[in-house]
Length: 178
Length: 141
Image (cartoon, rainbow over all chains, first blue to last red; front, side, top):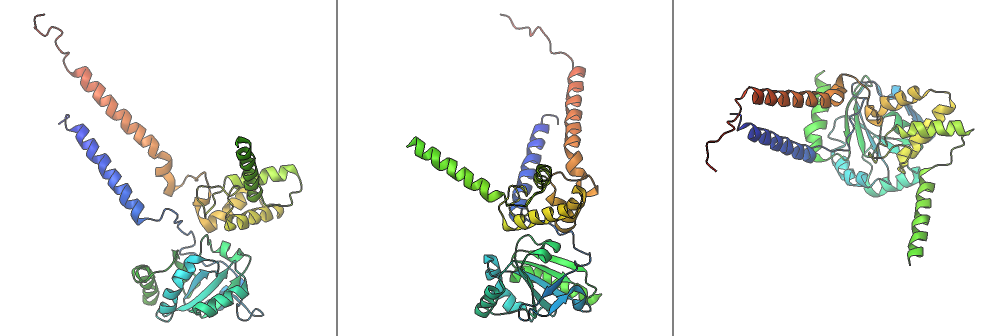
């Protein structure tokens, strides 16, 4: 028995190595869990992209759930994500609010004219302050906020059909059953 | 040739430093030291192996400005850290606080040390109990 002990130790180490390799492949090492989940969305008052005289704040959006998609025309991954948003925006069944983050409004408008506008409303956060309040660290990011204004789900990076089916759709469905 | 390389290296090094430091209007040296000290304890979210003081990422610049602004408002270091933790998690702190979620991180190494000590002790005891091998093997030389 005691002769086999080093062998068991070796098997244990190999198992640990396999676990580590798999973990690395399936987990994004840059992923930082949001402390905002199940907490009220931060306060904000932001101008609209297409009507900068008007502002929208957190209270205006209460009553119905909404998705907040953080994007910028400078963000390459947002361009990858864009066709997915165009295809899914109407299928989510909740409002899709865009947060134009650290961007020039005119460039953003040109970008949207070229690639299409999937958003119901677009808010402008030129200095990035609202983004910081939401804990945004890399666009695109997407938040699901419920009718009470509580953040329920966050996706970091581009939404893909797979991630939408696997995570976002069930999260929206959960809001419906409450 | 060597001199040319040296000149290029020096120039590049200077460039690097110029990028990493934004011109913030510190009122005195003490405030600047406090700022540098604080941003060195905070992690950049974008390039996660850099601290906020060194990072050239756009978000890091914004966060440095935010830290500076909060210092001007008279916030303490702890208040500023709390501000960032409530948005970006404990992850922004290079020195993770002790709570239920981090006890494995803090005490894990000690648990492994204890486990190792236990195994070594067991082996030593077993050896002590085992009869000594015969000194005379009986072989003829």
